[in-house]
Image (cartoon, rainbow, N blue to C red; front, top):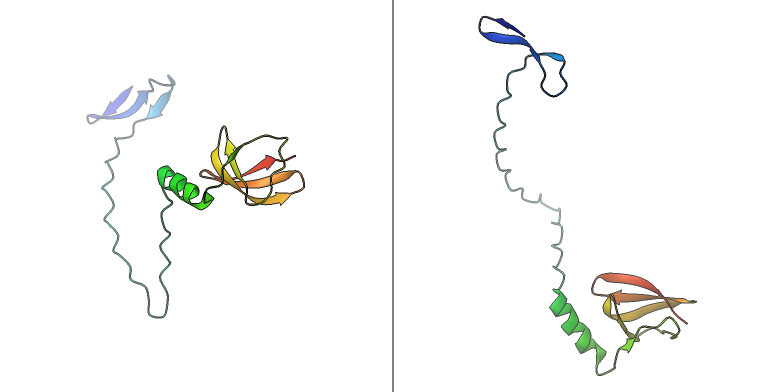
Length: 119
């Protein structure tokens, strides 16, 4: 809309159709320098490295080995599930009952702990 010494001062915005002050394009940011690796101070223990979770296949194999020959029963709301029993759930798969609380049980599946209804 207005130009002084070859530099635009005001322009009509294509997005909102109003008049704005011209702003030159910002230079691209330089990539941040890599950070130096810090060593622990004397007397301060480094945080323990968290072990990686087993893959689904490894989890399934561990569960089968831990079953020690016992068969997992298909999950049913009517069944009374007790601690240590194995469940074959249609959605969550193979799991082991960890804790019973009245009409609910905590079951450990490969995706984590789930609360299920027990008869």
